[in-house]
Structure formats: C-alpha cells, structure tokens
Picture 1: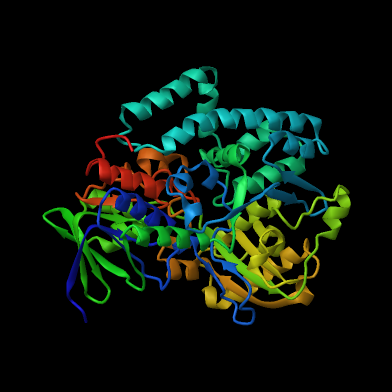
Picture 2 (picture 1 turned 90 degrees about the horizontal axis):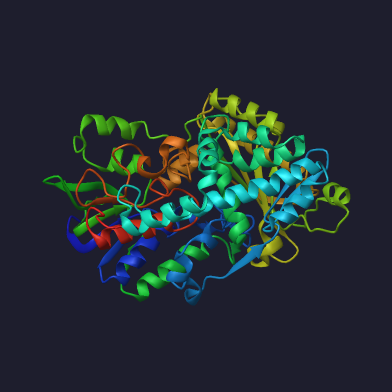
Length: 534
C-alpha cells in the first residue's frame, strides 16, 4: 500500500467531461490541478469504446450518442476544442418518431419543417407546434442565462440579464409559470390533438422520467435548444470529447490519474483538504476539492460519517435519482450488414434517409405501462418499451467497418431492481429491446454479430452513479437551480468549506454541455464561496 501524499491546488474527483472541463478552466487560471478517475480511461458517462469481443471494429457509446445542448454551451468555443482534435457532424433532422403503423414525424432544426411534418396528421397541430416552438424559444432566453450563473449567488450581471429577458417577455411570464408547474402529459394534451403528434412529444419528454408528475413539462425545453443550435455527433464516438479535453488539459500542465478510485474525501476542521484513494495514498488539496461524480456518492459515501448535520445527511439520502423506480438500459448491436426502415420510408415517399436521425420508438400507453411495470420490479414487454435507437455509422462511418452497422439501443423504462435480480432478467430484457427494434429495422435478426448490454445495476457499478443515472439527479421541478441536488446543497459550494460540486447533479444539470464543470471552476476561481456570479 502506498500511503504517501501528493499535492495540488484543486483536486477533482471524476474525469467525465464535466471534470475535465472544470480542470481546463482552472488550469487556464493558473491553478495546479489533478483529476482523479476510477476507470482505466477518461470519459465517465461520455465514454465510448470497442466493447463487443466478436466485433472489435464496432464502436459502443456507453451512454449518450448525440450532442443536443453542446451547441448552446460556451465551452467548445472558449476551450477551442476543435484545435485539440474534436470534430462534430450536424444531423438534421435530429430525431424521427417511428409510429408502429409505419407513419413518422421528423424533427428538424427549423421548426417550420417540423410543423410541415406534423401537418400530414393535423393542420391544427402544425400551427400549435409553431406556437409552442416560439413559446419555448422565449422561455429559453431566460433559461440559458440562468443556466450559466451560480443559482444561489447570481451576481448583478446575471440578474440584470435575466431581468431584461423577463421584461422583454413580460406578457408571457404567467404562461411560463403555468408551464413549469404543469406535467408534461398535461401540456401535450392541452396543445395537441392527433395521437401521432402526441406520441412524438410524449417520447421526447419521457426520455428520463415519466411525465405524469407536476413540473415535468420542463423536459420539453430541450426542443428550444434543438431548434436554436441543432444536434451533432462527435466523429469517432462520444470518447472524442473527453479525449480532446484531456489533450488540452495536459498541454497546459494539468494532471490526470486514471485507475485511481477515491475512497474518501478528507475533512479537517470542517474543511475539505484532499482525498484518500482506494490504495491508501492521499492527494492533498491546497484550495478546494471538486466532486463531479454523483452527489449521493460524493456527499453520502465519500464524506466521512458525521461530517454533515443529521438533517443534511438525510436530505442526501433522499436526493431523487431515477425516483420513479425505472432506469435506462443499453443494448448495442454489431451487425454484419446494413439495416433498412423500408416500411416507414415507403409511407413517407419523400426519399428522406431515416437511418441518419436518432429514432423514437414507443406509444404513450405502452410507455406508461412500462414505467408502472418497472416500478413494480417487472420487465416490460417489447411494446411497452420507450426506446431511442441510433445507427451510429449512418452519419459517422468511422464507427463500424464498411458495409456493417452499429446500432445503439437506449431503453428508458426498465426496472432498477427486477424481482429475482438482473442475473435472471438481463437476457430477457435485452431480447425484448432487440425484438422491439426489429419491428422497425429490417435485418437485425440475420445480421447480428454480437451485442453489448448494460443494465441500470451494471451502469451503477461501472460509473459509481446512483442507479446508473446519467443525469445523477432527476430533472424535477424541485431539483432545479438552487435546489439541485437538494435544499442546502445548491449553488456549487457545499456546507463543507472547500468542497464543490460540478457534475450532472449540480446546476444546471445533465446532458453533454460542460456547463456544470465550467460554472464550478469559475466559482472556485472567483471566490471560495462563489461571492460573484460565474
């Protein structure tokens, strides 16, 4: 056991994209930074690799495949990641809803083109979508500045920006409030009439949680970001983002230590002073410890018992993470040939290549049943799954050998803890996912070479995130802004002096944006308690 110590100004727990983003900003500000990662490679939830033994040339993106919020984030330009090898490809349309009867609706960057798709089903819904996109765009003009500031200490500049936006959209403020309090399901049913339109918007909203609860309308805000900046994919897979960040960080003197799991955050005199690794080594922090891992892990497992007051410790135990009892499951398939969507392309008749966009599969009734079954510990039937398939190589040929497909399957509503355990249910659940995908994609059965499967339980083990949740904390009404991840822990700095949060569980939340890492770094740079706006 190596019980020695090394020192850094800032010790960062986690080399996911947020940890690496924060490290780059801190290193640019002259701080001596070390990033500690439990896995053998950087990336965390933004990692990808070749995980199918029978198909080493096929890329597996372990979590996300698309970049939706990336184009609205200041991070790529500020860190000049293109200079460090990052290349992205725009995908437009970014999504296509595939209805079981063969119909489809493509979601384009231009909302007018999306409305034209919807007009095939309902002229009224088409006009309603245009109005909805304008409404969401107006709301995003308040939301984006708020996302970039410290929610507990926004500073005068941040408050002025939001206040000016509120003044500009003052006639909409009451509607904004009603929208944010409503359930996603309520909002859809109030605005749209056709079942196919409703199914599209239901699938878009229910990607992480059921949308029957109050406050879940906020999930549709991502449509505003899609229409603002479109959707892209990193060339080579999601690993390209942490790879570029790591290259940049080492070029400016930052350090990264992989295969270095943190066992404990060291606290002396009520202040975080470093970490103890699993091998016993201590890494001391002269100024701060920044945890970009899951907040329940950081605050509930890594902090020594008794560090937090009992009331705060209890709040940590109740931070909502996949709180509906369902989680995401992955099944990636390596295929020896090319899949087609003949039935849906015949229905459209316009020649649109449906292999390129991410697909949305599911019906509102089926997804609701699937969430209920999962909450009861039961594996949903194929028609009850909500799924987001992506043919990775259709846009980026580097992700599979020539003439072969890599199919990414992301199911949103599988049980966290099925009765009898995942050892008994993993194959059945994965087979259900593949069976459902085969209802839409021609060729899966005959072309499958091999697959990589990860249950919510396996994702939790691999990433150390509670329930394997990529969002770390559910995006609910009362887990946003200064309440994210919980009351008393918002605003980046923690009740423990010198400890900061900067991952998906911190403001402004999940998704591949780098914004939480940027905000935490700027808070540390500008003052230990974030006295000034970030």
